[in-house]
Image (cartoon, rainbow, N blue to C red; front, side, top):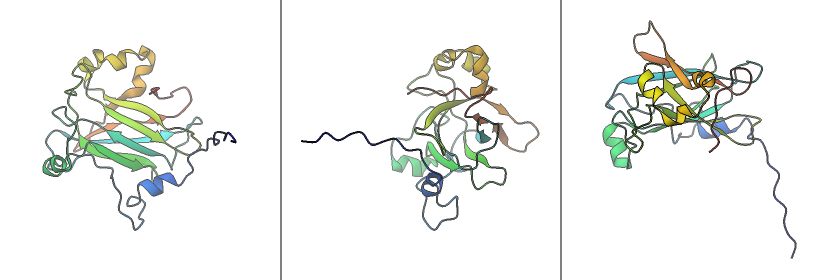
Length: 198
């Protein structure tokens, strides 16, 4: 019997964002997930997360895709489709960076509470980044600059060297009519975002 060898790894090509976010890219297919984690009727403080993904040379990446998950304002993930439909909170979003003129990702949601299953953790979003040239996706988190006390006691954030924690903090944008946080992701370089090995 011939032993088969492992298939070589391949990078995710530039097609994945179009395939996984077809409505966002104006294709005639329905997207399973959209850039909105929460509808307008969902309970909690409604916020917008805006940012860009940068490569090692500091250039904006126009074909990255982010998947974002979080708990709701009460610290719970939705447990069923019926609960999602009743609450307007999905707990998950998928967004590409290729349709915005500035190559930004924009996620509409509610500010998460402390997770009921891990109440010592500060409010945060979990983010997966996929882009061209990568063999595997990366994992990171988004914390909030106006949750300083909670951030101080967060056990995951405490594992990150103090000088690198700022790469995980979304900054509240002043002078806007709604609550907006800015969070940029740097894939490499001096400002490289902290990514977690999961």
